[in-house]
Image (cartoon, helix red, strand yellow):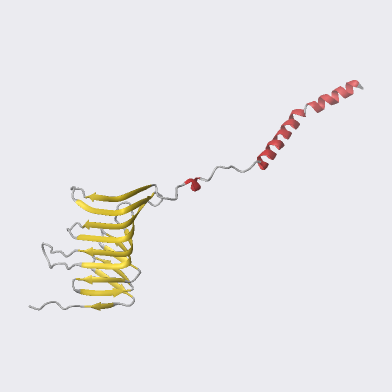
Length: 205
């Protein structure tokens, strides 16, 4: 009888390691399932939402390949946002020279500029002025001024856009419109909505 029990116990003992491994696996699964969630914040939540640096009473100058001053931007306060690589400027003043030497000035209560200053949005009492010029060949260019509460400009490609009411002064001529799109390189001006204008005849010889 003892021999029979001994052989039976030996048969059961063979499966004890397997049973222990199964119990260990069940215990591990239970711990993982009931463990509290990770307290580590997602990477997206760790990205800074505010500006990464500030500048006060600053001046930024850009030069062309020949070392000539290409543009200059000034303001009271500037905030740089790394997520979009944009610069928000309070009381902005800008002057820019085109490749043909045409001078453009811009001012606004607030502005948003991309990294290289090739695209700028102006908010609040926005004024963009291209000064009069006399090219070496051809007719002279009259002074051109845009005004509005919002103006979107591309200084390098000489474009101005607004989806809000604007006024335009070209020499002595004056226009107002609900929206505007101007491309100086292609010499295209589009005024939309309620358009009003006053044309002053030039002097006859």
